[in-house]
Structure formats: structure tokens, C-alpha cells
Image (cartoon, rainbow, N blue to C red):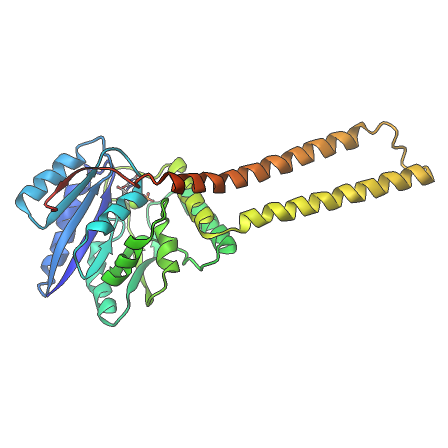
Length: 311
Ligand code: UDP
Ligand code: MG
């Protein structure tokens, strides 16, 4: 009997956690040919999420809980879940039911056909703000322009993944994992599964702008070295400009045109321009250096406070 592991990260999802469990449970009930397990990751919620999950786990031993000591972020929660799964095939799904669990049977069919990664592709997105839609679009455009691997647009972390792929993912030592990119990067047999993204069942998004920016920078810095090269291009361009200015100034001096005597404006422009270039370069480099620093420290991605129903 094949086993499905369902990985659900939760941060302050008290309003949806029970419904989430119920809806997924109804789906797996209708798949008697499969065994299953739930892995709920409580990502340092401040509300009653953990209590609710514990109540569920008391009556259902297929429910396993990992609870973080504080909020470590969505991607780290997924990472922790993937490390403990025991199934042959793994479903990663958001708690808020925006990705309908009812897609699972169709996705399983694609898996049985030999696909190893079945990623959910959003045909439409309901109930999401205009800002979110536009920023997501811009992000994927930039990411794909910069990145060395093609990252499918309109996909999130909703995925059905073969055990083999998860084993590979668990072996990757890097921190600040950007799963959408990594799942694309690892290769294997991939297949898009189109679905309608639903409205959040209850509660508000747990991805404020700050977390979106962190995710975006993990995606770009983690999958591209082009920003580094960009600094080189800007540097070369500014040197070229300075040469042109120099030639212009010399010619103006020799042939007495342009009335350059005050000189103030050109100096000011040059100073501010180069200061800007330098600051930008330092900013981009510091992004990389900070990642190197992070990896060097070898800090764990997360710290588990307790495990329930897990040896
Ligand atoms: N999440 C998490 N830790 C966080 C933020 C979010 O585990 O720091 C979980 C959240 O509970 C949900 C999933 O990640 O199950 C996606 O978050 P959300 O639905 O709020 O994001 P959105 O759909 O608005 O992009
Ligand atoms: Mg959501």
C-alpha cells in the first residue's frame, strides 16, 4: 500500500486549522487504496493553532505535529515537514484552503503516470488584492530574467512530489531555501496541474510585504549571480561616462566652447552619480556576503520545540 504524506505549514491559522484537517481528511477517505499521514508544522503561532492541532492529534494518530519555538517562516516550515515525511508521495499544501485538497486524486493520477513533481499552476486567483497580483507578476518576470533556471510562473508551493525528490531536497545543505526554485532546479519528471486558486477560507494573509520581500530576495539571490554582474556593467558604464566627460572638458578647454568655468554642476553630478553607484554595488554585494555569512555560521534552519507522534 502506497502512503501519502500531507505537509501543511501553519502560522496563526487557528481559524482555518480544523477545517483544513477536515477537508483534507474527506479527500483521503475517498482514496482507500492509499495510507496517509498528516504533518502539521506550527510555525511559532501566537494564537491557538497548536492547541487545536494537539486536540486533533489526540484522536487521530495519523496526525503528526512539529512545533517551532518561534516563527521561522513558511519555507523553513515546509523544510521541517519534508525532513520527517514517511510517505511514498508528498503533498505540500497551504493551510488556508486556497489550494483545494480536492485536486489530490487528479494529481495522484499524474504521479502514477510516472511524473515525479506535479506542481499546481493557478489558472485564476480569487480574492487576492490587485497589489499582490501585480507584485507577484513583476517578481516572476524579474526572477526569470535573472535566474539560471526556469521557474514556472503562477505556481506557489502547492505540489505533489515523489519520495525520491524529497530525499534529494533533504540532502541540500543550503539555508534560506526557496522551494519553488529548488523544485524546478532539481529536475526530474515535472508536470503542471492547472487549478483555480480559491479565496482564503478565513483569516488574513500571513505574508505581509516584509515576508514577500524576503521570499523574493531568497529567490533572486539564491538562483542568480546576475546582480553581481550587473554591478560590473554599471561600473563599466560609469567609467565610460567619466571618459566622455573628460574628453568633452578637454575639447572645451582647447577650443574654448561651452563656458565650463563654473564647473560646479558637473562635479556635483559626478559625485552624486558615483556615490549612488558605489552604494548600489555595496548593497548587492552585501546581500551575497550576508548569505555566505549565514551558511558559514551553520545555524540550524529551525529549532523544534516538540514533536508529537514522531519518534
Ligand atoms: N505560513 C507559515 N509561516 C509564515 C507565514 C505563512 O507557516 O511565517 C503558512 C501559512 O500558515 C499558510 C502558508 O504558509 O499555510 C501560506 O501563507 P498565506 O496563505 O498567508 O500566504 P498567501 O496565500 O497570502 O500568499
Ligand atoms: Mg494563502
